[in-house]
Length: 107
Image (cartoon, rainbow, N blue to C red; front, side):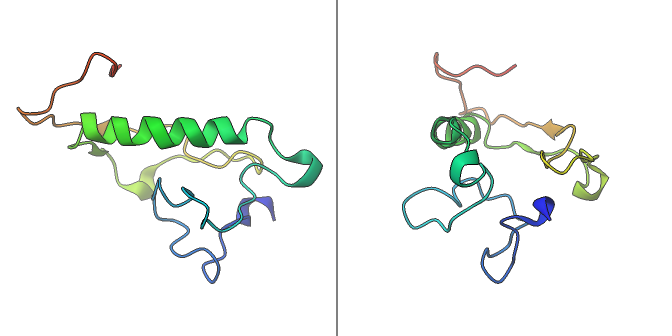
């Protein structure tokens, strides 16, 4: 049941699509990603803020970033509490005009 949380396509359009700004703003539907009620994650606001800042900066710095393997080949964690791939291989092609500002680093 936990793995299905916030994944009902009738309530959450395209639940399998990677859309980092899906939950941005006040119009976002409620999500169980960070728990609920007394079990709500105390770091949820910080995590969302970090994603709201870091992901656009990453995509701007590396506009050619793409998944390096077929999504069906990604090995997923078997647990029910943490859902996601074990690894996320990406390839990058930086355009000649793309440069990283001093505040952005790529490892």
